[in-house]
Length: 97
Image (cartoon, rainbow, N blue to C red; front, top):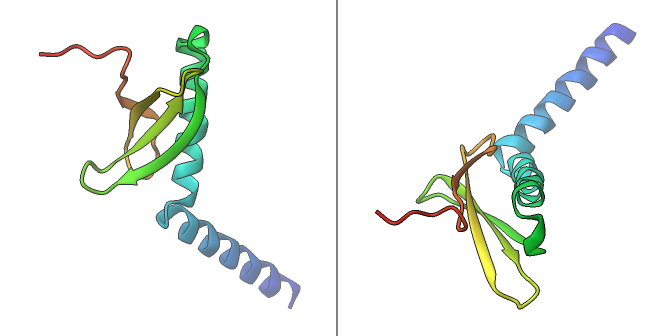
């Protein structure tokens, strides 16, 4: 009886995690965490503050925006959709071509 309860609880937890992951909540948190650390590591002198993160279904990636002390907004693009831990676009490391 107790084994069945534990299995049921584990199944519910896994189900909730899948819903949160596929629904975008978990990937957004991962992307936010990754982008904040990326900016702190690569641009500490720019004093950028996290502003927002949004998923773009057209680009199939996340756009994370930061504001500087003058209010100017900079956006970084992260991918892939379910584990956004790669920078696709960095506004400070952009080469037109």
